[in-house]
Image 1: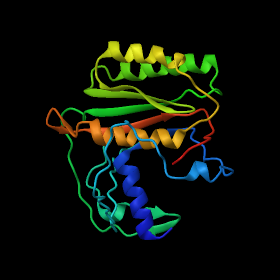
Image 2: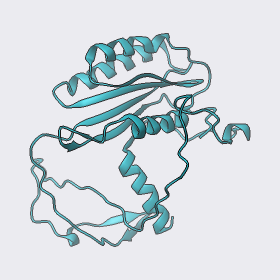
Image 3: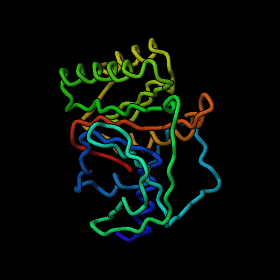
Length: 227
């Protein structure tokens, strides 16, 4: 991988913060139609921008938190204390800056992209809903908003960004009643989730920059993606 391609890929990974849970690679036997440009959009009325902004960079920003065996911060670090590798090749550190972060943690905007395809068993669906409730309950005292999407044969937004527990609980209960189908459009769901974040997630909250994430839960295989 060239340095520029590594930078582009790494920049996207850091900016979008995609968290994949047991995400498999797409099936290699897909037809030409499945790899064509996607005809659908996140919302039917969505208008594509007239201009597309493309950015290339030779620098990738990497956030690092250094702690010792007891979990305490390690101080007085220098650039020579770090090494960055790409495909086993060491990369130069062009810029090094120490930051002190104090006060409350950054507010969150999270999209749950959930596999409800036919291969998900009833027990797995029950555990999925329980895990979602536990996840959001752990962050009940943290400034956070959530959106919920499902994917199987199609990708569907069940709930746009909200911080109301009642809405989230009703949405979690709807998951098992959604039609599933035999396909698993995982990458289409990721694409839609990113669009949802860009268009509808706040960039700041409580005078802090929002940390925006996509959490993908997938039982294993992807089938039928357009992306």
